[in-house]
Image (cartoon, rainbow, N blue to C red; front, side):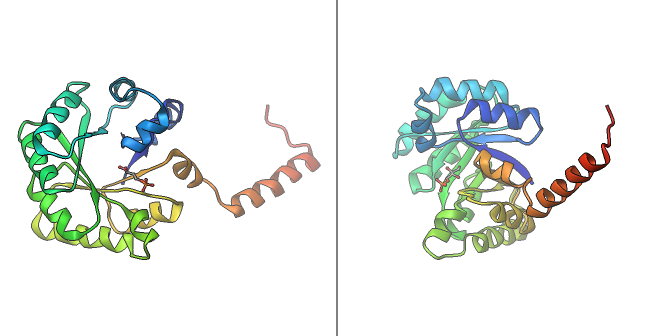
Length: 217
Ligand code: E4P
């Protein structure tokens, strides 16, 4: 499973990228607002750091303006994926931009039928939002499983990008059900390294190292 960093925090992206823990980046208007930076400027900086796809979201809701915005975003770098919402107009924009050779990430997906439409419109990525479904007591991971089955049934090559990931269990479960990509905040990716038994075991080893004065260097 590929890891995308769901952030515009340049330092966090650099740290993950240096460790080989990031295969791409996703942003959205809320993430750009949080960064306090100009969307074009910060997106370009991210594209210069990361080799993989960097999603930048359109601001319009009509197809024509989404397409114009998408074309402008696509000029930032070769690794831009234009993010469009899963609306009828978003699907029109997806089809046009995909036909032009631009990667498209169709976002705000909450149903298998929406994912089916995105694949038929040529989306490079479909972004089902796990956490937001869980927030309203629906099963976000079941949606990923359903989309996996449908895409495999018909050999769609649209990649399932599990989004709205809130915790390490979402990462594990997305990998188990076969998401192609998971996008998560850097804090969640780092938290995957944590285990209480690792911490306890290390404490015990450190105590023995001190007691026996074990030295390597
Ligand atoms: C990614 O593409 C999405 O914009 C993001 O994962 C949404 O996450 P949230 O539901 O935590 O805002």
